[in-house]
Length: 170
Ligand SMILES: Cc1cc2nc3c(=O)[nH]c(=O)nc-3n(C[C@H](O)[C@H](O)[C@H](O)COP(=O)(O)OP(=O)(O)OC[C@H]3O[C@@H](n4cnc5c(N)ncnc54)[C@H](O)[C@@H]3O)c2cc1C
Image 1 (cartoon, rainbow, N blue to C red):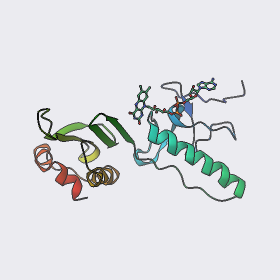
Image 2 (cartoon, rainbow, N blue to C red; image 1 turned 90 degrees about the vertical axis):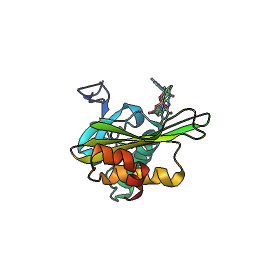
Image 3 (cartoon, protein in one colour; image 1 turned 180 degrees about the vertical axis):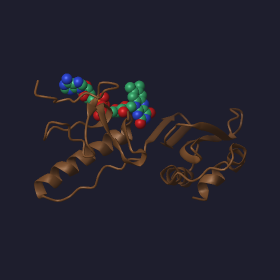
């Protein structure tokens, strides 16, 4: 095997890449679930096992390859973690990081006509992640902006009471 075709990640044995998904072997790229890459927003090395990142990392690798061929610069990958799932009439979205304290809000009563509930994650006084079940496109856009902006978080009780209003103000 060529020297370090796969510079295996020290934690989970996946493939280490740079911000363009190139491995330590020039011209060899790794994208999607297997890649451990620099997550700019958290100044950290991360691996993401979800569809959105698998598509976007592939796009980034292709841009990098084409950019190299054309001699043009390509911006570093600056990914905001985004996970989603849909099943029957349930549909949730999550943006950001699920670290720190989780603060639940909304109506999670299964007997409600249309339950809508979510959670914020607060770490070091900042809201770093948001989950929403049953959100409208505008509401999902609001939690995306929130996860990117990482605003200072108020007290857990205020955050719980504000619910989606907190994200809508970003
Ligand atoms: C049960 C399940 C549910 C999921 N639900 C969600 C969800 O709701 N939302 C979400 O965002 N993500 C979900 N995911 C995660 C998502 O499917 C993966 O993150 C995504 O498919 C990763 O894409 P990928 O291209 O990196 O890898 P893969 O889709 O795994 O593609 C890798 C391909 O490489 C092929 N391969 C492997 N070894 C070799 C080899 N030696 N030679 C040639 N080919 C090879 C495999 O056959 C496969 O086709 C789910 C995953 C699972 C397993």
